[in-house]
Every structure is written in structure tokens, then in C-alpha cells.
Length: 632
Image (cartoon, rainbow, N blue to C red; front, side):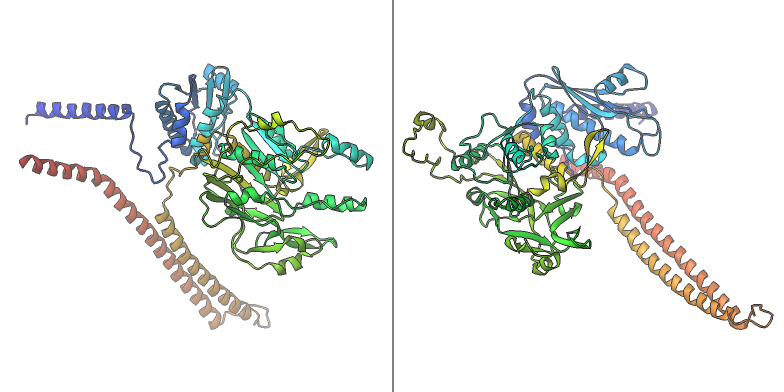
């Protein structure tokens, strides 16, 4: 082959490579070979994108030219950019992506600031940089002010939630059924409390958290049906609910709407209320709550007479005599006790539950029971009735560890109705009472559901005290206003859960994925192994040094009349021995470090050779196969 021909062939090959790269980037199909399919959209996201009616604009702001930009953010920006491009491809023209580099003192930077994006500064210094997203549909605008690489596994959920929320004109409605004063003292109770010369209670912070996302619609326990238009229903410490209201809850869940249910075997609020009412001769309130008919039908086991005690997760409390002790039925849970793969709990670090119960799936249940919060294996059951006058030490003696207990769980799937015979009948009219038969006949005009239409979602937790301020925040006065500092992640857990349930069914179906970061676990294991060996040698060296120093101290006490240290042959020999031992161990250190570097470098070289030779070998094998195939 002539030189000119070779040159032309090389140029054609380069052009072909460029064209292949261009065509590959243009083809709307990708092969995702990652273990967790992190580069593929979930079916829920695709369904949600297919429902978009009006065009949406995505403005991704990233200061790629900022000096000192951390490499982790550069890699994550590429990840976000590629994910957004997938959104655009799956939206069939409803999404438009703009990638903007907001340089300092430019209209782009002013636009980013006006949209609520905040410049970030790396811990290592450097220029401030923008890395956020603005989603706009008509006059609605939502933002992610800052992308965080630590939330990579929830990137798809965060993006889908933003695209979904920008299409909502009004806040979704959260129906709230509760016997607890979460919204503060009701007007009916205020009159009674004024007569008792007691101050009304303010609302709890958890209501403020929920109000940020939802319009809260209170529902009385005496109601016979739910208000129309609810998107999520929260049932907290249900007591004396009418059968018809329980039926309405059942049908709400089976109709595909999510339900937040909190029951409690031992409510601290009602225990305190019982003590105060006893002073005025009032009846003792029921401290436990349950919805046995519904929970049993949904395949969930819950015993309202049993409280969970955990010897390992006990909270330190102060007793009446001022001593500190561990209280095993007040649970202080940490990060390892939360489900790391579930969105409501993945980012939590701590939470406190007070005399909580436990939940489990009934054998043969057709629903999926996913534990979100669990105790340690050192947990057991305690009779709730035995807690009133028992001391912490006595309670600890009653606990026989039987393994982990589930405090909160997410139950999904096709639910079977708790009312197989349909809606409860109206009670017969009392003498002289007139029943509105017409309205009763039209109370449930549609046939009762026997099972879920699609996938139903129920969040259930066996405690209600964790929602109160007493166990979640520390209040203080700030310029005349009441401010609060979280004691733990109780409020975040409550907000995450209801917000998660309040998303569309498509959003609920999205789960956290893996991360693109792949740590060098083999290398780390080699380092740990070598360091362990190094540590053993150091310990051995320290032991020898201590022995020699003790001997030197002993010899230094033997001084002559002139109070001078006598360099006896024993001391000189001990020093020589010490120096020889020290030199020998330092030599061993160098050998260990050299062996560590050799092993890691050898591994790196093998990986490099594999990466370099893999492609040519595959091409060569394909060429041989192609050549033999043509000869046939």
C-alpha cells in the first residue's frame, strides 16, 4: 500500500470514528450494563413523563469553568446532564433542556440568582459555582437550588418529583384523623380548659412541616365519610372511629390513595392526661389505639397490649432522685436502624420512639411488607399494663431479647377489603329520631371495592409520641418568637413519609438506585490487611520499648556517690539491644510498606493491561470469526 493510500485510509478511519461517535450519541437507545441500572429511567418516571400536557423547560445551571471545582461535582454534573437528556428523550417533545454556564457578572448569573439558586464554595476553596436546576411550566417554577452528589441514588426521584410538582397548581390535600392535639387545643376543649384554669396547647411542629406541602383537612372521628378530593390520608392514634369512617378509610386505600397510619400501645400524652384528669375525678383515658379490623385484613400483625423494649437502644433518662439510667422502652435509634434503600428513611441519622409497639407481616399475606425502622436484635416485648409503676431496672429484667422488632413499615400491593359485606348498615333510628334515608342511600353511590384497583400504599408506624415536640425539637426564644432546634430526625421522618406518600403513584414506584461511585474495595481490603499487620508490629515495638525503658529507669537509680550515672556494661548492652531491635523493626516496616505498594501496583498493572488489551482482543476475535465465516 502506498504512503498516500495509507494516509487516506487513516483519515477515513478518523472520520468514521467521529461519525460513529456522533451517531451513537444521536441514537435514542442506550445499553445500561450497571448493576443497579442507574442510567435507566424507572417505569414510573416514563409513565409520568408520558402524562405531561403542556411544555416544560429545564434550565440546568453549572459553572463548569469555575476554578477549584471539585472533581466529584464535575462527574456528578455529567451524571445529572445525562439523566436530564434521558428525561427529554422520554417526554416525546414535552421537555426542553437548556444547559447554562453562569459566568460571574453575566445575565445568566442574575437569572440563576433570581430563580433561587445559591452559589456554592468548595471546602478546598476556589471560586463560587452554581449547580442547580430550574423547572418552568407556564407561570409555575420549581428549583433544586444545589445538587448534592451524596443524593445520587435519589437523583431520579428528585428530578421526577420536581417535574411532577411544577404541574400542580394547588397544594394536595391531606386529610387528618386524630384524637391527639397535633393542631393545638381545639375550640371545644378551650372552654373546658378555661374552666379548669389551664392554658391551651399550641400546635405541634409536625403540622407546620406537613402544611408546607399540603392543605390539611381535619376529619372528626364521628364522621361517616371522608371529604372529597383528598390526596393523602393521615390517621394518627385513631379512637372511637365510626364503622362508616373505617369503611371510608378502607375504600380510600383500595382506591389507590396512600394512607399514613400511626397506632400506639402506650401513648404518653394520654397517660399524662390520665394523671391530670384523676386529680379532678375524671375517667381514665384509653392510652392505646388500634384499627384491628383494617390491619388484620391488610395482613399486618400488631398487638396493642405489648410495648417494645430494647436493651441496646435504651435512652438515658434522669430518674426522680436525679440519677441517670437507661430506659429500654424509650428507643434511641441510629442510622443503622433505618432502611437505607427507602426514600423516607435513607437520609435519617437518629430518631426517638416512646413506648412503641411492633409490626410484622401475617403469614400468607399477599402484600409486600417492607420494614423501614427496626430495633436492634436485643429487643423484646413488655406488657403495656406493667409499665405504669415499674422502674427502669425492673423493666429491663422483663425483656427477653427475641430479635429485631419492626417499628415502622411500608406495606404495598393489592389489598383486600376489611368490609367484604360492603358498607356498614345505618343504626336503627331511635324513637322520635328521623333518618335521612335519601342521603344515606347516596352516601356510597359507587359499588364497594373488594380489592385494590392497582397498587395500594400504606405506611404504618406503631408509635404516636414521636410526632410530639417533646421528643423531636428543643424550643427557644428568638427575638420574641418561638424557634425550634431538632433533637433528632423525627420531624424529617414525618415530613419525608407524608411527602413521599403525597407524590403520584408513579413517584411512589421510584426507588433509590445505586451510585456510580465504585470504591476500590479490593485495594482498601489490602490496605486494611497490611495496616493490621503494621499495627501488630507497632504494638510489639511499643511493648519492647516499655520493657527497655523500665530497665533503664531501674539502672538509672543506681548512682554512685558523685550522683553521676554510671554507664555500666548492662546499660550499654541494653541501649545497644534497643537500637538493634528498633532498626530491625523499622526494616520490617519498610518491607511491609513495600509489599503493600507492590501488591497494589501489581493489581493496578493487571487492570491496566486488561483495559488496554480487551478492545483489541475483542476486535481481533471478531475479525477471525468474520474471516472464517466468509471462507465458509
